[in-house]
Length: 376
Image 1 (cartoon, rainbow, N blue to C red):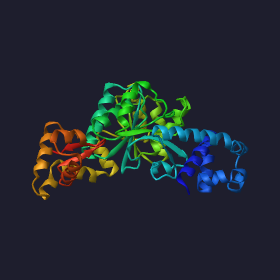
Image 2: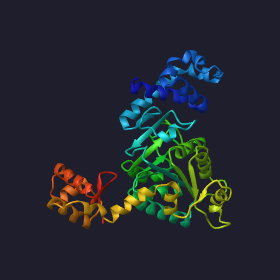
Image 3: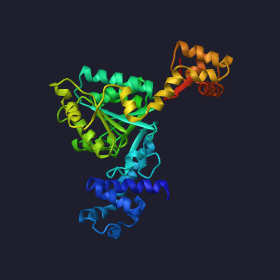
Image 4: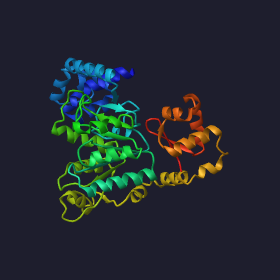
């Protein structure tokens, strides 16, 4: 099956999801591909005998939906957006297992959406210093224990943007799931952070361009945040906060849910405290407890070994070029490959080989965006 054809057909079929998401996904799974659905659109009851009249009517609008999909495809190709059909291996496979997964996602970024460790951090839009400090400490400590975690959130005000910014500061990749198309950004105030995320994570949505950030889209967005992650972490929430919807969806997907407790009577912590009280979330106090609960101790052990320089003892001393690189990074750590080449005087093609050997020796590690970090 031609990948481009299948993706275009999935984009066309996804337009139906506004009518009945569950029915469209049932139709897709029964037929085995979006192409099979489109090819059999005039006799769809041969695939699903109880297909609704509304679905039949929608399929008759194929030409209109196809034209919109082709317009979107052209826009995406011109602007570096990757449409990921659910059959695409780069589509988040955790999400693909969910019954109401989107048929297509639109992606701008460089992060692997199928990393071994993926978490989401969500919470109130009206965060307090207490909640913001929790996120800062948690992300920093998690980075020290598990250096390859992808942090997902919704790029909203409050806890979401705090999570994204701290992930960026700690060298972790972070993905923002949006409630609109990738031709705009809401809220506009977060454009600077979103720009950084394109080279250290990305932006993801199920919505085509020219889709507004309507209220219902935020609820739909939450299932992507929940479904593509191993665990949901709630940091501050009112009694009926939107992050509780994400937590509820995550539980429905059989994901682990955690919540930081707050002071009794504090409006911003009432939702978290209720989650913990009602066994809707495990009580969370620190990153170490989270890593243990998730069974990720091996990551922590390997990182500790690297930090202590155990790997270095297994290799021969540094070469002159390696000593030059180490000296430069010790003065100004976390440099891009090109800047490192300028400061060391080593050509890029030669420097790449030097850095590879240093990484094998446990002397340096690569960060997102072509940055290199000297290990202590």
